[in-house]
Image (tube, rainbow, N blue to C red):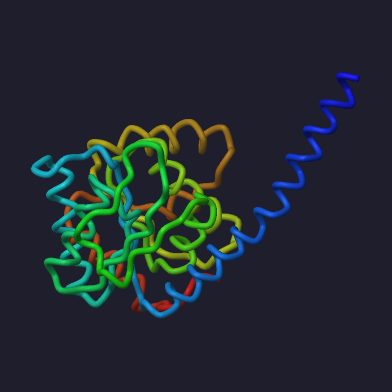
Amino acid sequence: MRTEQKHKGWNEIKTNDSWAIFKIMGEFVNGFERMSKIGPCVSIFGSARTRPGEKYYDLAVEVAQKIVEHGYGVITGGGPGIMEAGNKGAHLGGGTSVGLNIDLPFEQHDNPYIDSDKSLDFDYFFVRKVMFVKYSQGFVVMPGGFGTLDELFEAITLIQTRKIDMFPIILVGTDFWGGLWEWVKTTMLEVGNISADDLNLVHLVDTPDEVIEILNNFYENYRLSPNF
């Protein structure tokens, strides 16, 4: 009897999952339709917990402002912290400011610097991540937590495995990222889990000018387009 009850519950879960496909499809359709009209953008990632006036908040504002001054828009996760700083810099620079918001039980609320017609809401992290990857011409990764690492390493993996076209991945803040990248070089590389060429997929910098130089040098040789 218990086994039958367990199977009944499992079958009900599977039935509910199948109907979720339509909601997932709706998020993809809405995201593709709206993002395809926005034009070349660079995504800025980082901690939602970074506050205005802190070093990396102010640096993210500067980076974003320079990005839009050089003809790109800015995409963020739409929330507070570094995301807010990225949208604020884009707003101050008079450029495109996009926010891909996610419904979370904590931390997430959209910030006031997103263009009113470029704020998108998602229930599914994986749909939102597809939008970042497909419509970004570069990832600028400021100091952050687990979510930032997730987005960083997924992009590296997709480029490494040639599932998407190459684009610049730029870590800003050598004092924050240096230890992680040194571990990648001295542990992952030394035991043979990655190749030496994989290290070229990521740049470590400290200034807005270095970010712009990497983006501009890359797009002297590659055309701007969606990544798949």
